[in-house]
Image 1 (cartoon, rainbow, N blue to C red):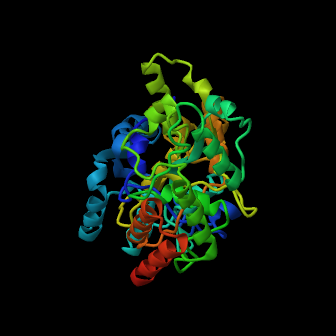
Image 2 (cartoon, one colour):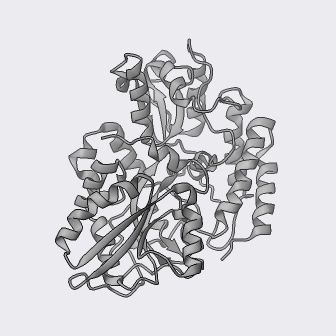
Image 3 (cartoon, rainbow, N blue to C red):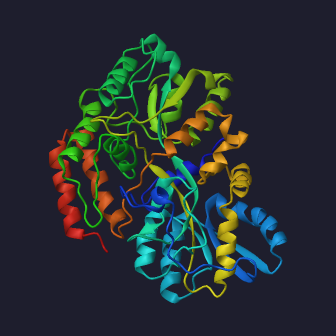
Length: 430
């Protein structure tokens, strides 16, 4: 099974974007896990759980939990599907009114805000986090404490047409950013190509494409207690991103919703996106009678610079327990069960949500899909932005400045100075 359109929706719009903390060190994922909450007694757990989940997860979860309730007859689970466009407000209103669910799927950019409202229960010490992707564990951390368990994940890679690359004389995708840009320039020169690569020219969510290039050259947008947009490393990263538009390699005004069609036609033979695009481009090609399109493209890691490690963006969703639950043991028993490798493989079959547990990727269901397996490798070093409560407000300014970089030729220094000023004005919210 390949990923579907639903993840496209998850990736669009900061209100719906599932991201999290991008700390460099000291995460449970790095050191073996250090949840701080009181241990739970899963053996004697009982009660009735109200669970909220968004999108397809809310629709499919009742089917999955039938297995859980069969194994735990003293626990009853009621799942409420919540529309994405109203989810954040529904959570905030329920926290204010004291009517939160027991367990919920929580977007990772909401973690800092909800913890700041004293709504979430710290992850129990009896739940170990060392088997999850480190970046996914980062998304559960606020001020050094874990308040959730990673549920599912996704990350971004460079898609490229192998047949066009062959014509361009590129036999291997360069791993360095300078070489990668040269490749995109050569791809543009091939017959049928209008642009070398599709890059988001600002607007909502463009940071998800810009930051992987920045992280992969050693830049960071935050320390533990402050935003750091105006560092020389970030300025250089934004200048690099902007050079694709300045040099005519990427379209600063691409038509909406055309990425898949342009990739299939070869008009734009490279783009950066997540694993859900595999099904979309292959299905689109099949509609045009090309059932072998999967053999005409591949994916590659985000290129690096300055000796840094390739680090893409990690998205996904967490499972959290709310403090007001009257069935804490039962709530965390359900979360722990949903986090088991075999459960995550079953969940992948139902929803195509990629497992957050690294062990689940050893299953043939994922391991035998060569392109999907490459995403599994990229997830090991993927990163997330800070869980500062103000992040979504600050990153809107970043997206706006990136649009000026792409469309008006604004320099990286000017853009990052403006973002830093806005970030300093807003603060971290901690």
